[in-house]
Length: 393
Ligand SMILES: Cc1ncc(COP(=O)(O)O)c(C=O)c1O
Image (cartoon, rainbow, N blue to C red):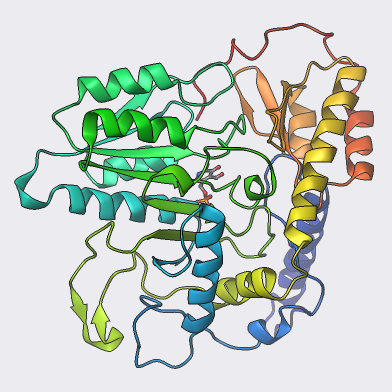
């Protein structure tokens, strides 16, 4: 309820009502963007009632007491295991989202690789990497080298190896993506590490951006997607598959893989190692509840449910005359872009001639049936619509 004592009270209450109603509808019908609220009513009440600020490095003892740094360290340990690292040797923090996580990892990597007067590093990722990698390259004033992707959207390993050979003199900051933003493709970290060890042993850092796949792939048979076979840092979004109702991400790295900033901030009682200062305690608390209090098999069941419904969506689209495709371990379903009013109604991002739906735990069969009913008959089955895709990012 909005209360106002001024003369605009009627219009402000009206504005709030309109915004709330629009938001409710938009939330119900959102199929293309993977954020949602995965928490039961009341589950986060305790956290919402307090001004929790996880300011600074969760491994430091700050003067402030209104933080959940202890729970944040538990969250990092859990993520470490999912990422394929031991849970005891990890550093990192809960970020504002995956963009901050990737920028931070590349920032630490650039400063680490530049030490000792080494040549300037270059950032290398596929043409399907998220735009935050390009943004990071710009912010860090570091050249960005784009590698071609294979038809399924994963990095083309031969092109990657050729790019490394071409930049053999420069240390490399490489980003692998575990679930690309538009196609849901998975870069093979294991093969990338093999190539890096051939040309750049000891002179590279590999970050895995698992914004979308980080809470999906651990529960599948997918291989070579995380740090188990090499690599140094890893990030995942908290608002996508888990459904933390505020945007957030988690970045972790192997302790000692990076040199951290040394600038000392007195009020933090230690070095200023995080990119942002004040950080969301609500996000940390919600992540901790999901990872430590929810039934142990809940995330796995959610992941399998999403994969099953993504497979059903491919069938439903195909039956309706819309050629559709998804990767084996992906909940992202692509199809030829429908008319713009349909894309607007269901909030479908488009790239070139393609649109996609990302199946999250809130996208149930009823919603999929409503979507299919609104689509009408498709353009008919044609093979090979994927290779025509333009450069997507
Ligand atoms: C692979 C990947 N990386 C990074 C991001 C950026 O995430 P955020 O919006 O949380 O900053 C996204 C967002 O969709 C993504 O799909």
